[in-house]
Length: 417
Image (cartoon, rainbow, N blue to C red; front, side, top):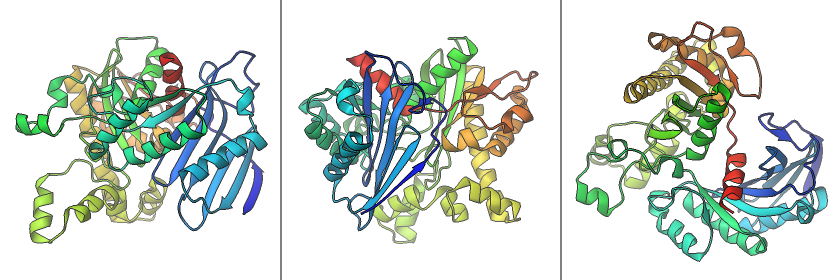
């Protein structure tokens, strides 16, 4: 086992553990996001917006695993095999005991679990019991890449942390009440209803949090907003007066924007064509569309920083890929402005949205017909705070708002309880 400890900086979008500790009586929530071979976690004080600790367990089940635990400005790294999720979470609890903060003194009132797919069953957070677990299991066919991993995390956490309630917060919940015109596909009604085929969306926790932050920052609750959640996975939402009226991801997270490895929108007949002409099977096409396409398929790399380096080096294919990426963004923003009957605010969030000033500038320039103008200085300023980056002459407020899904999950858990 290899262990290293270093000083580290943390995300500045919320106060971190290097800030003063919360006062006596503060409640905390341990937020868990379990992936197929990873566990992300964060101990959050939802009232203060304070991350007391955070970390990542990765490469679970592989020959060499890793754990990163951050607390109080320190970062501890451990490299060792991690057999399964139970072993990983047990190690996390051990690190809390040894490195802090002490969970027994942190007044942990709940464990909040991120769950991607809640189908038509969950319009908000749910207190996890066996019935809720059974329902999440039933939804695995709608979220085959995510729900099984979430179920593993829930199972292990309920065993190891049995003394506190567990709450599921669903990525689809914010889009539960989409207008039927936006949620229903023009598919045979009987088939669609029998097999639960409709638009569910994803990243809803982020879209809800960010759109709420925009309303608070601008001091208006009646805004017509477009939120662009741009990371390796990417999605857009149209939000009117705090309610989602459309979103780009559909039955699965494949639909919509160009992503790191996903195609986004594509003619469904491409599946038939590849099956008939290329002899590809369903699993092969699934992998192609979800993991080997998008920016990775267009350029060979899903890291946007590398794509920009290739553009600067004069690689035509990289420039073409960026044009495709921007074209899709502009198309969705324009469509959503039409759906909402106007646009008051356009917000960029998530890893790419928050950090890629060049991309933001290209998108806003293409939206000049809506009266959108960017302030070059504000746009290029490095900051972890929510801020307006549009010019004083802009008819649309353009913002950068760091997302904080862990804080949103913690707040929803406490609200439910």
